[in-house]
Length: 134
Image (cartoon, rainbow, N blue to C red; front, top):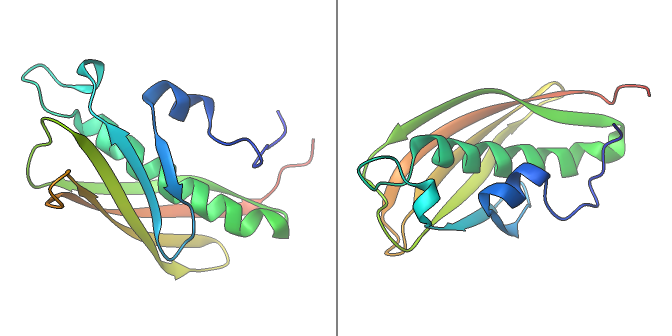
């Protein structure tokens, strides 16, 4: 399957409901309104959803920055620390590339609730590799 960076969002992000606010490596941002299907059993935003938002924003912003050089981006590692729950409203991830290397990018990200409180902090490493032929 050929890469299509002109597509507005990935199929997975459509499924989750990710709203893209900015995909610049200096201030990449996504937002996700809370829905019942995104909650874990006691009603909090699921940690996997939070990790998904971090992965999506960091991968997409890296991919958009390196694709013109014949490179692709893919998640290599993620570490998320959950600080406070998100139970209503929306969650927004603010991410910034801290290292933009030839083969890896490292990102810092925060997930904020509607009141601007930090609910999770994350670090994401993205592998940068040559675009596969065919």
